[in-house]
Image (cartoon, rainbow over all chains, first blue to last red; front, side, top):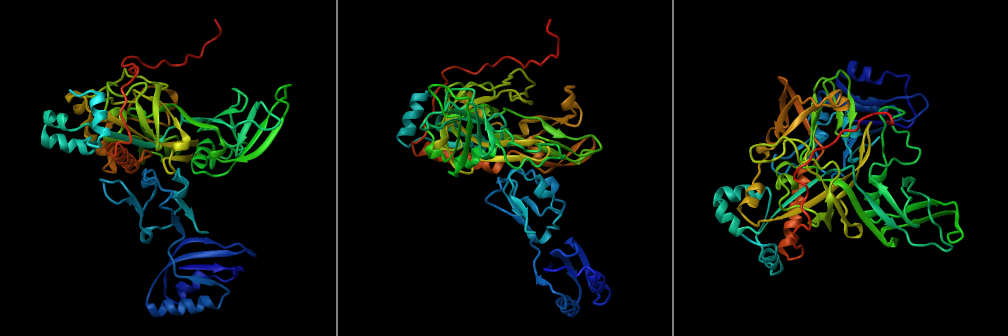
Length: 131
Length: 395
C-alpha cells in the first residue's frame, strides 16, 4: 500500500491508529515524513478485509493519495546484463536466476522488501526506486 | 586434420558445422573425439564482463579555422589528446571532470569513460570541448560542439587488456564492508564475487594459445575486430589443471575493432560503488577445429576450471600472494559455496547469459558465411610471467 501525502500530516500517529483502532498488522517498507514537505508511506497491510477497508476509510480522512501497489522498486530488464552481482545483495531472492542453464535474471515483485541494496550494487543501473 | 582454408571454404559455402563451447561438451561425449573432430568445423567461445583496459581512438575532423587540441573532454570526461591534431583516446575508467570520486566514501561513480563509449555506440549526441595553446597553422584555441559517432572519421576501439583467461574470486575476511572492482564485499565472508564465463570463455578453450594469436579475427561488441597483440599482463606461467587449463589469471588479449560496426547492448558503462567506472565488453572468438587436440581443449567444463579465492581486504591490496582456497566454476554456479567451513553467497560480474547470446550470434554469422576464421600472424607467448614494480631510489 502506497500513501502519498501532498502536504504532510505529521502530527497524527497514523500507523499507531491503523494498528490500535483497526487491528491491522503493519510492516513499514519505506517512509519519508518531513514537516511541510511532500511525504510518503509504504506499508504492507495484513488483516481482516473489513478492517482493511475501515483503515482505508480512516486514511482517506487525510489529504492523501492511496495506491495499492508493492512496486516501489523498478527493475529495468533492458538495462540488466544478467551478470548476477545483485544476487548476494538481495535478501529475499526477489532478484534471482530463472534457471541454472541460461543464467537469466528475473525479478519477483511479490517478495521484494524494498531494502534498495540492489540499487547500490547494480553496476548497470538496472534497479531504481520510483520515489 | 583440417586447414584454415578448408574451414573457410565450408563457411563460404554455408556448410560449416558450428557449435558453441557449451554445446560441444555433450556433442563430443556422445560422438567421441575422433568422429566429432571430423564433423565439427568451428566452436564459438564468448565472454561479457567489465574489462577496464578498454578505450577508443577518435578522430573528430578539422574545424574551420583549425585547432590542434591539447586537452579534450567528451561529455565532461577527459580524453587524452597528446597525439595528432584532432585525435583523442578515451579510456573506460576515466572519471568525469569534477566527479567527487571517493571523497564521500563510498563514491557513486555514475558516469565516466565507459558510459561515454556506450552512449557513442548507441548513437547519442555527445559534447566535445577542446582547448589548445594556438599555433600559426592551428590558430583556434577553444572549441565546443556536439557530435555523434557518424560525424567522426574514425572511432577505433583499442583495448590493451581484454578476455582475461581466468580470474580471482574476491572475498572479504575483514569486519567492515569493502568496495572493489569486483563489487561490494560484505564483511566476514558473507559473499564473494567471481568474474569469468568459465567453459564458454575464449582463452579457457585454447589454454596454450594454439589457435588464438595476433591477427585472429574476433567478434568485438558486434564488429569484426582483431587480436592486435598479447594483452598487457599476459602471463602464461601459472598454475594449471591436469588438462592444462589455467587455475589463475594467466593470458590476456589486446583487441581492436571499428566502433561504427558495434552493436548496442554489447558495450555497457559500469559504475562500481566506491571503486570507479569501467566498461563491460562482449567478445566472441571462433575456434576452428583443426585437429582432435584443438577440439579436446574446447570440451573443457566448468568443473575442470578452478580459480583462487583471495581476501581483497588484505591479501590482495598488500600483495601477499596468499590464496584462501580454490573453487571451480560448477560449484560457483550453484550460488552458494563453502569457504573455511563457512557458507558464502556467490555473486558474479561476468554475464554467462550474455556470453551465451554472443556465442550463438557468432555461430549464426559463421553459419551464414559472414564470419571467416583467420590464422594467427604471430602466436601469443606461451611462456613468461609477470614482474612486480619495485619501489626504489634512483641508483
